[in-house]
Image 1 (cartoon, rainbow, N blue to C red):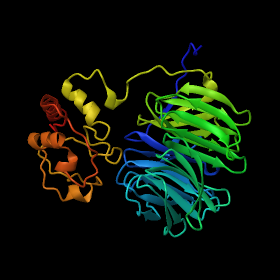
Image 2: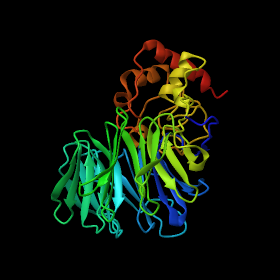
Image 3: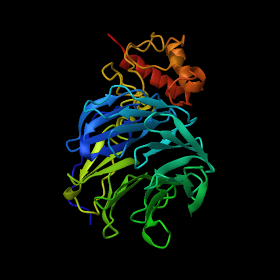
Image 4: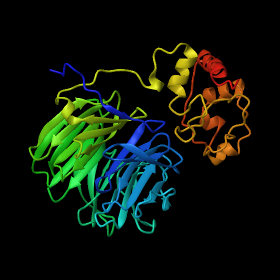
Length: 428
């Protein structure tokens, strides 16, 4: 039976968009979060207190990873770029050490070799790339997956690589020549997330069709096999020192596995919507989750039983159902994930604030990091140009900009949105 008194998760504000990726460096008491708002936030791990915002990416940032030494941080995103941040010094860097930009599509996973010498990246351009972590130079590109590569992990000796892809396979590669050693799994359904522990002989993975698996790396034994059909597995993290593994899926479900007993320790609905990433903090016995909300969600595991399920609620700003007007509803669903109606959050949303937008030249707000395409634009935002933007789409009206494809088909919906914006963005 579910708990009669629902526990309340702790919400940590900071981002201006959904939280896509999480990474921890427990030795330095650091947590890093990446977001749809193009930013990377650095937090104290135990208190989950924001320390610094790192900017530079030109699209949603999907993933972050610390090197095993904790001295480097890598972040990667939809802009097909990887940023390497120098954490050698106590002072957190303001700018990245290197920008790695050889991929041609979004980068969705990264991993440092155990010896900290190399960085591997998995991209939807169907490639795996190996980089020198000290110089930022591209060492090798590996092709072989039939479609996007979703996850990549180094072997214990840093001489081999494991990867998972949309083609449903998990593959084993030799780094020296880039040749495939063998295919470990041919699942039929795409594999989204992957972890490997050669010392403990463990392979952990999650698939598009909702399968969560922990088995022996040699394939002789399956320890955990859970299927939630229709709920793609979107998050997986592994903690060998704590004997824990965390799975998260697109239905908001979190499953914490006790690897010592190979049993489910906690199974609960953690967020309303997908779990994009989840990390475990052993000191606080907590799981921190990134999802569609702007906030990081922290669940203290002792506060509820393993069968606790969160009541559904549509309370995030871009999924409102009780807007006062159709125009307000269109703004909530189509615009508010990227834009505010005031000027107080430059750098905390993926798009600039809309206060005073009518009559304003595109790309003209000071201090906002516009794309070059928008800076060069001659568009003046009026009722006509805003209607055109949502009718034709930003890929037609503002080609080359960072704005995601967003259209409103119905004329009345566009008109209602414009009328709402005219009132909501007045400066006097």
